[in-house]
Length: 303
Length: 275
Image (tube, rainbow over all chains, first blue to last red):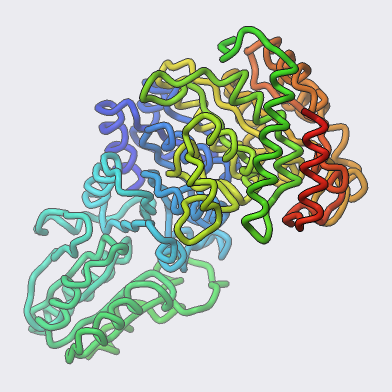
């Protein structure tokens, strides 16, 4: 996903000289070498100095530029949080804060490199928009959108590498609207981000069981598509939320709010990370499993 | 060096500073508290930026140069100068900190003449670096001016920006430190003796740096006029918190307090003697 991010950003940067990339000693792979070679004046590496990364991006935006700030998610959002809140949120500047490797993808690096609560934290900031693409193609659409929007700040939560394409049969991507990757009538799975690959496996298994399954990418986590989710809740007998995020402030909590507000009557099962740091090591799947999230465990609970 | 004024008259600058202090004093009588002493300590610095350094705006436009007050709590001096320049109205200042007004205790981006929202310390200089980069990237000659408090230089984020400004050779930045030696819990020289000498630290980080008397308009003017322009420029300005009103000078409670009627009368008398 980070490669498609850098490819899309490079393409946008060739069209728009206002696009700047400010990084904190972490650079996306792929086309980024073309960006740094061709537009060195628009590639700023602040070093290991994330507060300054956000402040400099804000200053560029105050003078009309369209900056992206990029590093590993914990360091793009948590370390410089007050700069994100004041410089970007309060001033409502069109800066995209890219959180790369979000969630628990850095599975063996420990809790310092896990972002389990980033949606809740970013989502609590007024003016902040949040996009979490589910696959590299959606990441391209989201990056292009971020490169041209002037609404205000965006937290772009992306994965790392090796995510499969899940959107080949999907309807077109639109900011602020949930996106059906598959359409069914019995069960609807709502999800976002990298864990959509696991949600797709759950959908496959449920389909094998004879159910008609919808799979939905809730790529825009703020502003969340309340009407779209309300319709999903009313049009399916069962809704399942799968997220790589803490239970507070993520998709499960917000779906439950919408369900209450709209008096939904469907069955609703949610799968979130626990409200606990992860001290386990192993693969991404191993860590999710330690928090009760695997295809097998989900299928057992939703039966 | 692109400056507003090619000639300099210290008497005119001093008269403006006293006028601005008096205007802040008058505003103090409408509110229960305001950051008066911290505005008085940087009065000559902000006056020089607006009235000697920043080039005038073309009709209907903005100055090609930018001022961002990093020590946001000092913005009273900015407000009264913006009023003097016709960018803020008398009514805007009369409604300071009222429900119908637009101006508060810290500057709010979007208000006339306010280039960034500050108030939380340690944010300004990074934004200044971004602005200076944007000017260079757009091939414009705009200068970026800022004033930091000395306490704010204790923020790690300020040092991140200091490192970047010189690494990027941003010669279009002119920064001032309002070195009044006071912060909430005491004199900086006593609570943080290792903070000094300040000049050496900026020189070590690659800034062209000078030290001036921050209440001497001539020293301020000449320091900036004579800078090389090859590096970011830092002016360490030795100042007195509460400068101009004897009972406020170096007295911590005047960080955030309004004078009562008797105190106001005394302050008016003292300022009038200075004119």
